[in-house]
Amino acid sequence: MSSQRLTQTQKMLQKLSPQQILLMKLLQIPTMELSSRIKEEIEENPALEENETEHFDDEMINSEEDNFDDNQDEYEDSDDYDPLADFDEYLQDGDDDEAAYKLRTNNYSRDDEHYEAPISSEESFQDILIQQLGYRKLDDRKYKIGTYIIGNLDDSGYLSRPIIGIMDDLLFAQNLDVTEEEVKEVLRIIQEFDPAGVGATNLQECLLIQLRRLKEDADDDNDYTFPIIIIEQYFNEFIKKHYDKIVKKSGIGEHQFRAALNIILKLNPKPGGAVENSNRSNYVIPDFTIYNNCGKLELTLNSRNAPELHVNKDYIDMLSDFSKQKKTQSNREAANFVKNKIESAKWFIEAIKQRQTTLFVTMDAIMNYQKEYFLTGDETKLKPMILKDISEKVGLDISTISRVANSKYVQTAYGTFPLKSFFSESLTNDEGEEVSTREIKKILMDCIEQEDKSKPLTDDVLTQILKEKGYNIARRTIAKYREQLDIPVARLRKEL
Image 1 (tube, rainbow, N blue to C red):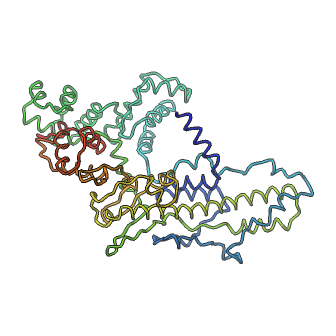
Image 2 (image 1 turned 90 degrees about the horizontal axis):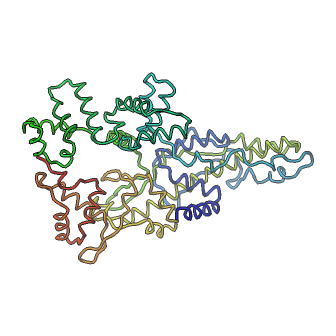
Image 3 (image 1 turned 90 degrees about the vertical axis):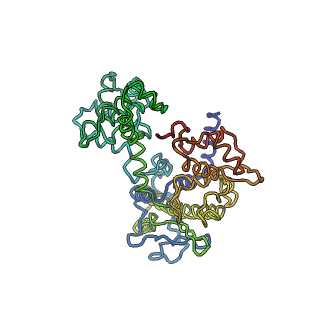
């Protein structure tokens, strides 16, 4: 099946023009990364220029007025002027040498692989660790091992890949034959990095790394001996919250146990996630803003990172000059180079324009579809909505809607949210009305937040509560929603 899907995808891409492929890739990029992508294009193509004195401000853009200025008025007589129109004959007609440009492709492809990945405007978790690795006095061999280990850490900061796998990868990928002890030595170095707990191979090791670091650096009255004993010797009982067994087996007094438990509960089980969440909260720039203007919703498209672009006047002048020169092979090749650059610049400018239009009409459809929510902020007002619903409203392909929804954020009076959070499936309540699964999750979360933590609600009890509210949902569905909300089972939510 995967081979069949790959073949279908390849056939689809073959039917798309270079301009369409460029637009697809630009749609995936959030506003915070678009500026870097534009700068990259300007560096690649000298025929493309940014207006240094003017930039788009945040402004209302509607379907009738969403037009980019031609930006050629300062040196063109007409808005319809096309600097490429008169040069096909010059490039194709030859009365001298054979035109060598006919045997070549453009000097670079618009579908180069480096366009696929959006450019990050922030330091990633791995970047921070690589920086710390550079501070250590390591030889080239150990540095390569270290960078490879860091590249294999998951989002939580754990190394889930076995040491033997790292050894095999280094041998085949980098022709570096290393021993198990060498990898473990470098891993121990990484486990000394910040945030504490990074590089652990499991949760127990992660907590122990943090506790031992706290003990070494202790400048308070806390005793870290008992917390270390609990995690080191009674970890299974700890994660199952069998606290009475720990007290009985260890001989630790109840008062000492409570103090140790308070220290353990303050540790970070996902050190890598803490860095990512911190970066995200500091760097998220909303792509849209929705205002409630006296009961009327207004949508703003953030265009701050989409500067005004135009074709470099010098390149247009160069192209014009070629028509006055003798048709030599070198002149035709140079003219073809300039023409390709201008054409690429025009394509990019048009793609940016189409991106802005597509983003706006898609978000406008989402806003109107979820109007009750954006007016009130009440999550129970969210309607079931899938990609197909918006696709049909705006007349765009589902894959296009998916690209718009991915990695985009909207700022509202009730907070800033990822677009994909507004998409959800539906269920039917006792009254036969379709309700959003997000509405169910909100009720579920409210119930758990209000529960007595000494007697947390089980999935069976939660199922019964929702049935009483008119939502006839199976227990296994409740468990699935609870897991999606990253809420542990009742036993693990229990507090002393």
